Length: 625
Image 1 (cartoon, one colour):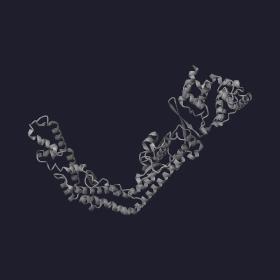
Image 2 (cartoon, helix red, strand yellow):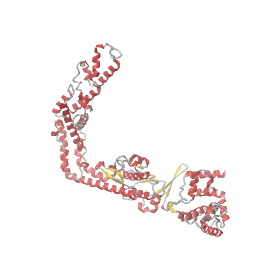
Image 3 (cartoon, helix red, strand yellow):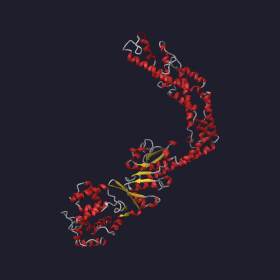
Image 4 (cartoon, helix red, strand yellow):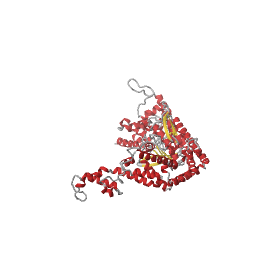
């Protein structure tokens, strides 16, 4: 499974709940499924009554079709707009052919009567005005013109179709209806002039009986532990699932009784096991309550620690349980989180919901596509804590997770700062795209250092003195030590022949005060104590920085983007660079931006974007030209 923007938009923040299938994600755990399976073993004999039982399937199908043809109004009558009422309202003109149309009997009473009526009516309408001849045989049809037109006056293909559907379903129900019901429905569907009030009332009764039986059968078919509410006794409720056909007399036939008797017996057998079943259902209820309470607490604790002013609740009975969201200053739940939440809030909720979906679906690999780069430090750590630092069955700990990120802070946390808190299970790799090739470089804990450590490491190396001075200047900046040595370095990097003291405010002519000879000497002495292989006088030192060929060679020999940017900054006047984006990048990288206490060693991990380094290469080529 992959967490990315597509996941956020597709699977979360629905109108009625925060995430699709809340119940399957939060409640239906392996332990819950095991209890569910045990309950199913008790009730499967009841449910098997509906499996591979063609008579029952035919009964239910035809009952639903006949019931669906009619609708009972608020006053208790039949709605005139339903297909069934339309089919019966004009009487049965298939059996009772209107006077004068008897010659058409073979067509009207054929299995293709609807198609014939449609063909006849369209033909009469489109061709009767063209000629007095029959459009089929060309014989004179003047004397039969009224008879031909009468078909369209008496017959409507849609009404006939509705009538035929009712006749078919009544015929199909056949032996499932009581003998009296069959006779009465035959009379009603054969009426010449349509149904009267007493007929309508009888159809209402039949529909009522059908609806009651369908409801009962559907209730039995879907029987599960969810049917029993908290505190309900299984042994007392199960008898209500039995069907008593004596109160559904229109359906009380021998064939229906045979089917219902078998179903009732299966329920009776289950009643005999009510005690053990009650115990399993109670366990299921307790497990669901525990899971609801646990997940609500975990998510709400995360929201509190991360500074989000929201709470979630899992609301709804059994499989209807849904994860709802509300702001802590409002008592009502939000409908559709997307329009209420900020980008950061939306992503924070999404990554947590994604975690729970992974726990439910158990994918082989979990991919997190830059999930936390947009968050501040506290929220980042709260999310990592939620994802990886709880019991293994409640988070992603111990799972195969690939997290792709531009953010170094999670690497610092999981490999250095609090590695033990993540059970030492994290490995990290630095991915770099250069010249359309991706390279992988493992990151170890000792690759993460303070910048002071990085500077001291460079100063103790055999690097060129200018490279060492780059890091020494940065060390002073990080420590906030802007004394004599820093002033000298600042002047060297600016290639000033006459060093200035920027600790002293400039005069009214915006001129900076010169650095005193004592301060200059003191600064040089301190610098050479760190970098011994550098001249000890300012003119010689400044000549190193003015040696363009030397600086260019250092640039070309370097494989480190950070150093390249510092060298291009020394080599060129920053204002000569036309590309303002690159100019800003170089300028800001040159100065201190030490957001983290720890960082990856820039001498080993080239963190500079490829396009920036390439643009510096282009600038250098232009400079040489």
